[in-house]
Length: 140
Length: 142
Image 1 (spheres, chains in turn green, yellow):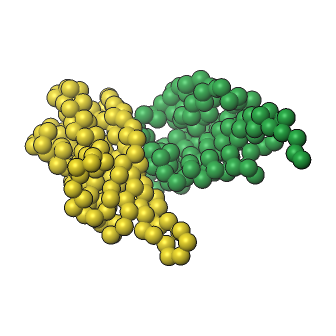
Image 2 (tube, rainbow over the protein chains, first blue to last red; image 1 turned 135 degrees about the horizontal axis):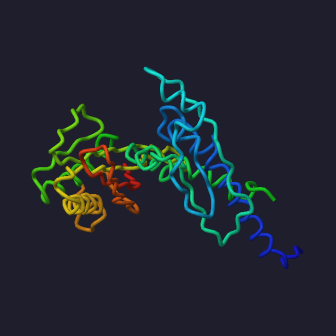
Image 3 (tube, rainbow over the protein chains, first blue to last red; image 1 turned 90 degrees about the vertical axis):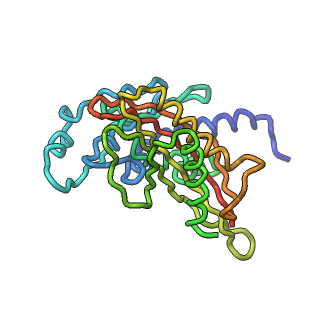
């Protein structure tokens, strides 16, 4: 017979691990930091996703961050650089509200194009949630 | 049912609601070539993105479409945000009309929309228009 006295604690622990994994994955190249899930020209926007317990301030100016400052000056077709700049906040708890946002100062403009909404409301994020919160998913 | 029918069901529902609210508004669809309307024009850009096409149950797969709809509402800044709100309301009414019990399913596609996000207002300094972004998930069945 199984001892179920630790079931509630185990479940909480698994969900907490799932939340932390999901927060890390959603801002990585597995999530929003890729072409198709974010609008991409230089790659600065897609590289600047954050997941944290405070609202993300959109204030980073592209001219202050290499290599994107140089990419922005290029003419014609640009080869974008997507290199996530931030790690998700660690030690997230289930009662936390986690804000996911891009820290670039022109972030507001990006929602006009639809890729982010498409990812968040579509199959992409569903798969990531399944992976993070399924029985085998999550860090234990 | 085809992808075309699913798309047409949503586009017609939104267009009918918008035209009833304001006949001066131009509807622009992502699957049709268009020239961006001028600075003084009110217009709505509607995009339908398919994310899934079938459900694999036991036996043969079933046509089941899902995805996202995005409507960007553009109103000249000189018209004010009240017009943006009114047009956004019309778009939302159009989207939710497919869920109403009395909806006539002209395209035989059982269209449905889920929770609607927005209108998220964008007031971009260098643009001649206020922008409102409305999006939602949808489903349609064969």
